[in-house]
Length: 240
Image 1 (cartoon, one colour):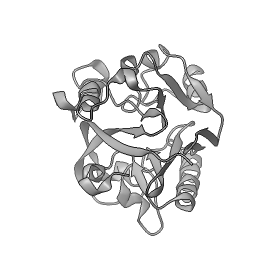
Image 2: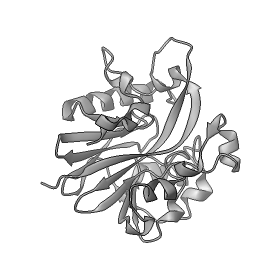
Image 3: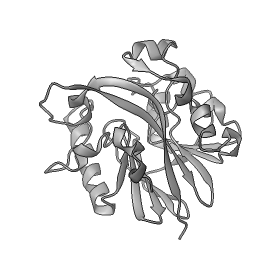
Image 4: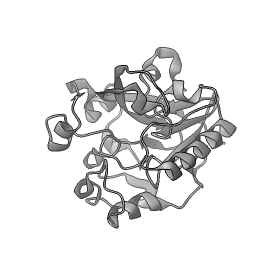
């Protein structure tokens, strides 16, 4: 089975209440959380998520507090690990919110992959919160429908709740299976609570139940996770 190396890319920082990141968290801390894309290198060159717009753009202004330094621009971040955007063959989206799917223009030669439910909910207008619809609709996508193998060593599972089409990406590495959890689990502390918890942002109780089911599914697959907004993924010993 194919094994991939995973490299996190730091694409800016948002300042948010910790309670946004962990459902049921009662503390009042307001902390800095990174925007993250994950570069996967193996049989294929793959990017999982593409980060957000520049902070000075209209959606970035709405997202304040939000900062991004020049070296956190996605093209610069890829260059820092010796990767040209033209080398990316596939972009897999955990979901299509503005902070995960805004820099698609950098990858004209890549195929874009997301859950069909995610795309359809945006096109139908069922779900508009957190999306920049006109940006999403500029591009064509290939769709996963629920749980699906993608490539040798990489698969997706549907874990809805935060969005209708949130998916987690399971990656085989030299250290075993690693799950890229997107915004199902945004920080590692959430997953290692007793019981494990999901992201604190969801539209209703049904979505919360779906997310908790998703967290349980992730726990059954692997204890090694790389969340959607976890600062510690940039520590030297956190790569896979």
